[in-house]
Structures are given as structure tokens and as C-alpha cells.
Image (cartoon, helix red, strand yellow):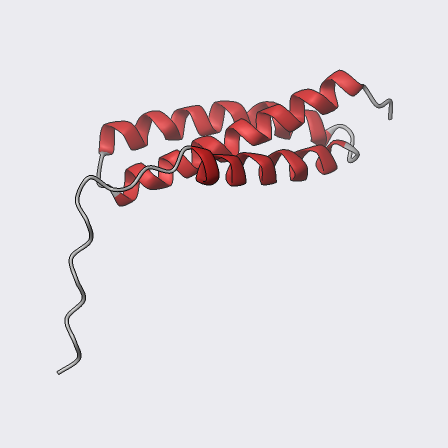
Length: 95
């Protein structure tokens, strides 16, 4: 089991991008935009394949995947969150 720093960096970047794509995919599903959701789904799986293939050969890369995943989800929600174009309907009080 040889550790390659470039592979570790690649796993971190790939999982960060994977989580960012997953957040965008989920937002597209919630917004009921099928074409956008399908595109983000394809990107999500393409990116995740690199990370999975890399860290299944060496468990050390799982740590890079964890950190990358955290960065991707946090960064996407923190910096790429857009308010919905239409505000949510107010909730009705219980009858």
C-alpha cells in the first residue's frame, strides 16, 4: 500500500466536487427540474467513480474522501445557495 499525495489530493477534490454536484442535484429534484437533475446526477456519478476507485485500493484515501465530502457540501451551501425565485407558501394554521 503506497500512498500517493497526488491521488489523495485528487480524491479530496473529486469528493468535494461530488458533494457539490449532489447538493445541486438535490436542489434540482426539490425544484422539480428533471433535465437539470439528470445532468447533475450524471456529473455526480462520474466524479464519485474516481474517488471510489482510488480509495478502494488504499484505505488511507478514505480520510481524503471524508474531508473532500465535507468541503463540497459546506462550500456549496455556504457560497452557492440561492434564494428560491418564489417564496414558499405560508403554512396554514391547524384546524
